[in-house]
Image (tube, rainbow, N blue to C red; front, side, top):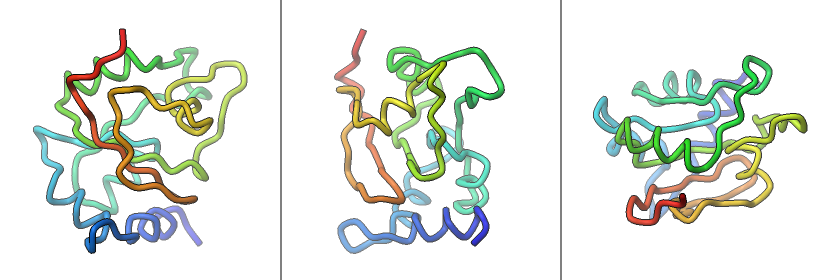
Length: 130
């Protein structure tokens, strides 16, 4: 299957009787984009704004949880969508998504859905890690 099909299938899982993609479509807006590790494809499937982090093969930057929180605050991001099977960990520069894949979740994220294809987190703004 192509990437669009994989992302669409992962977002078709349900939480509280609602497909994840329907839940996210209602929650996202230009004032509240999502953060995801496959931002272009998430944006295409959901038809809405998604912010991404530069992958390690494009930059020397390695995003820390504190830096990502600053980004989340700046853009008003309320949800983080992580697709672990579509993410390659860089041993040289383990960053935010690499740590999520290894199970290291910052305190400012609340996991609301998890599975082999997708983990969905809600941002808990009052719990910033410095």
